[in-house]
Image (tube, rainbow, N blue to C red; front, side, top):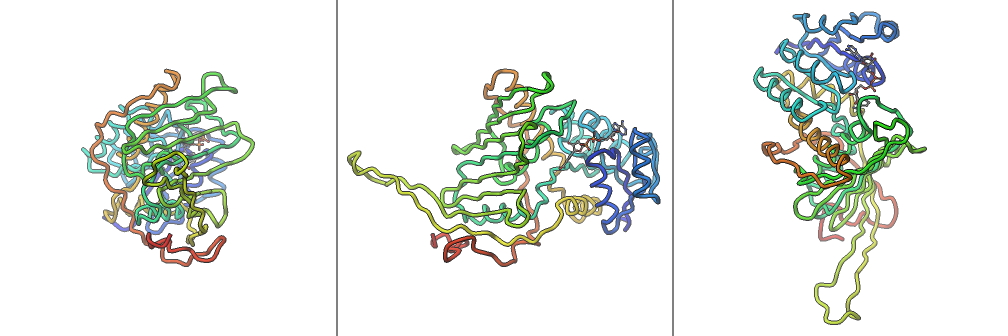
Length: 377
Ligand SMILES: NC(=O)c1ccc[n+]([C@@H]2O[C@H](COP(=O)([O-])OP(=O)(O)OC[C@H]3O[C@@H](n4cnc5c(N)ncnc54)[C@H](O)[C@@H]3O)[C@@H](O)[C@H]2O)c1
């Protein structure tokens, strides 16, 4: 693969400019052209990037033989059509989340990319977050025991979308993190929600994902909350992790807390739960912008130096859950089983290059109590 990868970006609204900024700074990448249907948006972008070509016509990107890759950052209703056209034009494609509006569309994109030997990657940005990667390392090392359940809350005021409900907008992040941590698809999904601003589109939703071995996850999303909340609690049989993405530094806290049931008891009087409260521990995490790592990873994949962590297939898995959540919403929260047509999930193998080599800090208490030594609890 030649050294410099030439990229075009379509969609310069709220999120596109962040991708554009990172692609401009990425090594071995030339941001060749930006596209937006709105001339007004392009005028603004030209002021920021006067040396980059611009067009209102997406077809210009498809026709540009020099372009190696296209990044799609338009609203979801355009994802399928644009990504498919780009793949058929021989371009590697990065599509913002969610990959598409339906499972059928997402499956077709995965298949067109495979048939043409092209990279298809989806913007599950949080899988590039150093805090999420660290959380995965902690889980995989067995430090928290077996995951029992995960609860996620992603709430804020707006930004209301016109074509998708709040679950399709915000839950792809939570779902992609949950699948990454558990490394499996749920068996069923149920979802309840309600709409208060636009009566066609749910602005508050609560999803329940049921996994094998009695594991489960709750995902609460809202565009109608006064506070921006980005929290996830991962409850393990030995310890619990609280991940708060709004914290500037201490994004992860590991609590040495659990409940034990006595193995044997003959009378109710002998039965007592044993509550274990130990130290809390804040792992050191080297800060890096997830979007920067995501853009670099896309380029590495195009060069053949990596395989997409957030592949088209993982985008499809998330869309499968979102589609089931919409069916469940229409059926007042009925559990919808997830067809296990997906091939085995590739193990999410980050090269754990970055943030685990570091120092750690105790949030309270004496010792970090052997977080890496299960016997040390
Ligand atoms: N990864 C993340 O953390 C993250 C965060 C926010 C948004 N997103 C995703 O980014 C995508 C865009 O979201 P947004 O909030 O920026 O939307 P937006 O509405 O602010 O911007 C979309 C832009 O696309 C342009 N556009 C629409 N149709 C077009 C067409 N046919 N040709 C060219 N341009 C066209 C619009 O003019 C607009 O400027 C969505 O998929 C969203 O889910 C991802």
